[in-house]
Length: 130
Image (cartoon, rainbow, N blue to C red; front, side, top):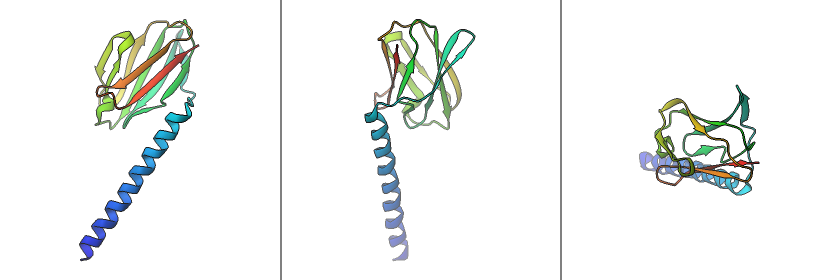
C-alpha cells in the first residue's frame, strides 16, 4: 500500500512539474519577447540558440545586411530539437548531443523573419532581421 501511495504521489509531482514547465514555455512564446543573444565576432553576428527540449530563446532580433552565424548549443539533447530545419536557407542537420554547431546564414534583408524548427515541427524558433 505504501508503494502505491508513493508511486501516485511521485506521478502527481512529476506531472505538476511538467505542466508548469509547459505553461512557462507557452508564456515565453506568447509574449514574443526576445533575449539578448546576439554578439559580433570578426564582422559576423553570432546568434546563440540553445537546443534541448525546444529552443531558447524562441525569438531573436538581429541586424539586417550582415553575414550571420546561428550558433546552436546543446548539452544533453536527446530529443527532436537536435534535428534542425531552416527551410528558407535550405538547412537541415543533426546537432551533437552536447556541443556547438555553427550554421552560416547569408545577409538577410530588413523585415525578413527566418523560421527554424525541429525535424518534427514541434519546436520552433525565429530570427527577426531589422
